[in-house]
Length: 258
Image (cartoon, rainbow, N blue to C red; front, side, top):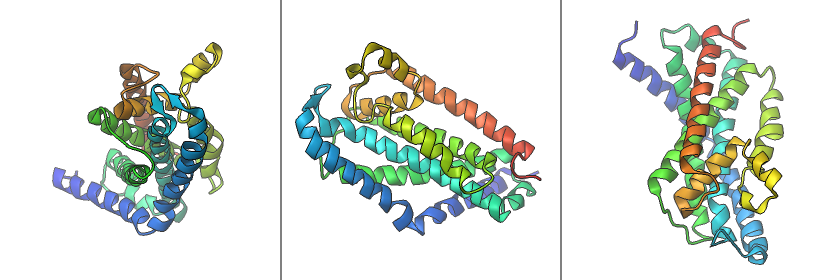
């Protein structure tokens, strides 16, 4: 039975390992999403945005900035955990954690914390870049901070589940390519759902990313297509479900024990 201090040291060790994993190769993990998002700012914000005009009372550049930051956070939180845990499976180093007295929930939280760290690091870097393209202000700092943290945690858990079931390196790219990317682009990053026909407005409500993007946009601009309480409820509900599922998968050794 581990003491609280031993648990803290074990958790800290996993987190440090996860942070060092992506920070040592920041040119491959932090820089690419910053460059990609900068291109979005230039193409959609400056070139196309000037023709679109205002959206929800803001110029188009200001409107898309929160969505682009959130898109970078989602993608990197997810990819960090899915690649890290699958790499541990592939190298069979995860077995060392599973046979240790470290509780499963701490192992899970360690990987999630790594995804959170990378997601927030990329989000901060993208935010700094956004300052060169728009006059960025935060109307509700607490809403913006809690939304980005909760979203990063959610997609870190989703990445963990993907890694558990993945059997090859190809499997860890299927969900980001065919599920995550379409949902992100259709999640209100580049437009308000008020612009859509009634049917597609209702259809968009089935996209969970819509709630996260709108809550984050509310934190920056004070406007949202979705009530804030609904957005928080959806995000917290998904986190609770994914955490329980992830913990059960880890406890049963699904995808790890052969």
